[in-house]
Length: 397
Ligand code: NAD
Ligand code: MG
Image 1 (cartoon, rainbow, N blue to C red):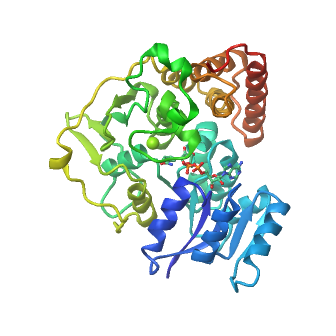
Image 2: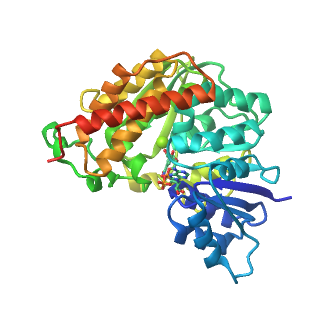
Image 3: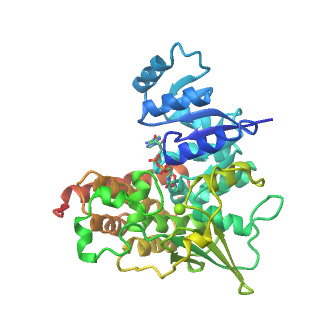
């Protein structure tokens, strides 16, 4: 029996890497449903190549344009639209595996729907876990589903802790988790030059090719901040036991330190097809189309401590995690608004951390854990951040 997949965010960087791995194993996987938000051409190509039963787009206008293009191609694909359709393909009985690869808070509701439906949930959409970690973990536990991290660092940690033959990761004897971070494109840029960096420069990651939002997050190191929170929920670890280690080559994807002094790391090429293939086939290992590392050619691996002054977003994430409650959802919402403003040329690069810090100060953190309460906090934090952005006098140089 082939495993059937729903891919939320199939047109994105993770979505396309997932389809690449799936296409290498037609005996193991088939694509049941896909979604895409804006790039209809890309979604059309995916439908042609993978023949899903359902394709979901944001609205009826986009749906009819895609239907028209598919018309006459004798494909089985039904085109549906809207948020309810997105949650439906995540929870559909026909789907065995759900890849959550939508970027940002927009992915929360369908990701939670997959968790509640007991799916094998492959999580790339870290923002969903940052916003609603307790809710998502509890939903997976209750439904008897499975949560497999796709983020390369968390996938690496999962691999370091994995038991032969599968099952939950074994956390006994773990002292600390060490999340590696490349430091992004501005690791060595003089602080004085950061005020004038452009969106394209921020998105030019030295090692990874990714969507624009996560690329900016990597440049501010908020990505690592979100990953600290992600690690907390995935592995039940306190903030004090999660450390960041800067490793510019992105070859060591993360490490686990044990009580006896052992440190186990996972290494590989900086290619998301490796963690995707691992999660897809877990506990088996399958070809991901990725070459074996040539360490002799790479020659050296460097490590250094993160610079908390240059990257204030790291401390903001620790602060939100220590506060617990809805602070992480507030952090995430403010960051999404600030990054969008930076990408639009409405905010300078250092302004991102300023807007996030100010929003964390201003919006009340609550203990709420229900979905509606979290979505309400998300709305409030966005509204506050937007006001702050509109009132700002600081513009990009
Ligand atoms: P991307 O921008 O390349 O793709 C995002 C996908 O989400 C697209 O399919 C897009 O159509 C869809 N989308 C965007 N806005 C939407 C909305 N409002 N409603 C519904 N769908 C929407 O992003 P990406 O780089 O593939 O990242 C996806 C997720 O995976 C992010 O949460 C990111 O942090 C995480 N992630 C990515 C990488 C990577 O290497 N790209 C690595 C680790 C984690
Ligand atoms: Mg990562």
